[in-house]
Amino acid sequence: EIVMTQSPATLSVSPGERATLSCRASQSIGRNLAWYQQKPGQAPRLLIYSASTRTIGIPPTYSASGSGTEFTFTISSLESEDLATYYCQQYENWPRTFGQGTKVEIK
Amino acid sequence: EDHLVQSGGGLVQPGGSLRLSCTGSGFILGPYSMAWVRQAPGKGLEWISYISSTSDSIYYSDSVKGRFTVSRDRAHNSVYLQLSSLRDEDTATYYCARGHGGNPGRWFDPWGQGTLVTVSS
Image (cartoon, rainbow over all chains, first blue to last red):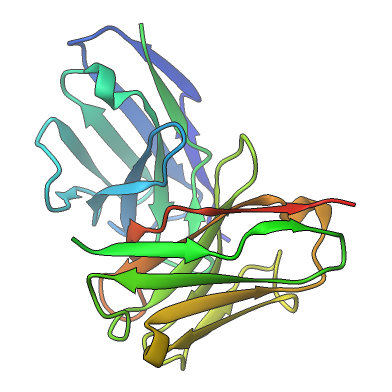
């Protein structure tokens, strides 16, 4: 099983500042990575697939990069609506596995 | 807009059974693979099951293998997750999600609203 490790567990950022989240895979997964946003009390929502491709309707304030075992997700200018937990998910192998999440707080 | 509507959660005793339903709204489920993901209270996401569009590929996580069964019904535009031999640790919100990115499904979008399953005596 591929273990996905996200850091930090919690990130506190001031409005307008940049937020950078990390996701590490226990083995190479190429670019087979997705990012999801889960707001409190809501279902997860897909933001990014293939490591860096935004899904339809996702603004360019969200971006992501990486390949192999190291991946990064960035919110370029934090807004209050970005308060959420963000999860990475690998689809290189079965079982599909998620990171434990990074909770983004507004400072 | 495509939606997934879930039903079937509730309170069940340890060792009991429950069936969860997930119905497509605004689109036909048939061409898509589907997944089930759960989230224990205050915890992260755990993928637990996958069914391909033709039902010829089905996968389970080790944590539910042999106890849960996924199926789909084109006539009802639905997929189902039968939960059996339930344990306390199965208490979670269960989400269905549509697979994308070819066969097998790779990433998941959209997700259902979730349904809470509580296993307790």
